[in-house]
Image (cartoon, rainbow, N blue to C red; front, top):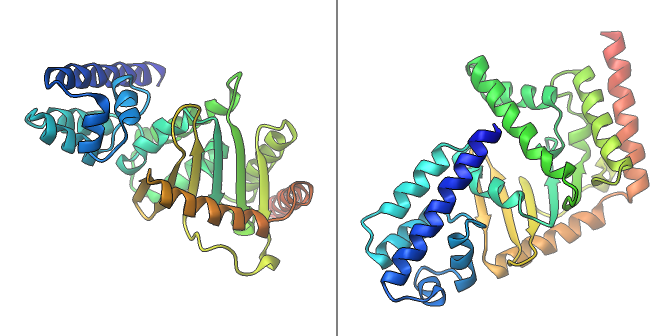
Length: 279
């Protein structure tokens, strides 16, 4: 996994170097190219430094402006296809590793960064019931690899708002759920994540029906990622990101405070544990 990740990074660095060479050959500044492909000049600089990876539509527009015969779109497609993540999530996974602050909202399943291997396996099998064992293990390993960002010396500030559905749905069975919720509780006690729970009693809450991640960076504007069924949307537009941030603030207002949230989480873990002992 580590070798594959380093190889992909080297390939993105080649993408960035080639982009810089082609841009300069066209006598174009980063700002001018950015304006013509509908991103900022700062984004073009981040593409060239392999800090941020362009989406396919941006790569295709770069090809049109620089008249490169589709080379950047082809490189982008190849790099996405060699990612261990689904195509719609690959760019978000790259950005997640660069964020200084992450805010997740999960209405039904534990967010990927917080999943244990047994839980991740159960989710993978539920979504891919005919997958080979090798494919399942690869997906689980990729998810565990993502979670390493929480163990970095300088890890991102991480908020996770979970609906009570997440705590009560016995993904993988009660023993797996008890272990999963214990894991989140440990991370909370270690101050690695601040989990907040929206209880059933809260009733209606802000209209975010799928999983949402807000990402903030040291030297780039914030980004939002929303996910639906086999589809993801990376939002860079400041107005849209601001709307998602406002909705997230409403979710935070609907959630229990930190200590009651942790108490409910640990209580749910104990409920699953009791269920596991009786089955």
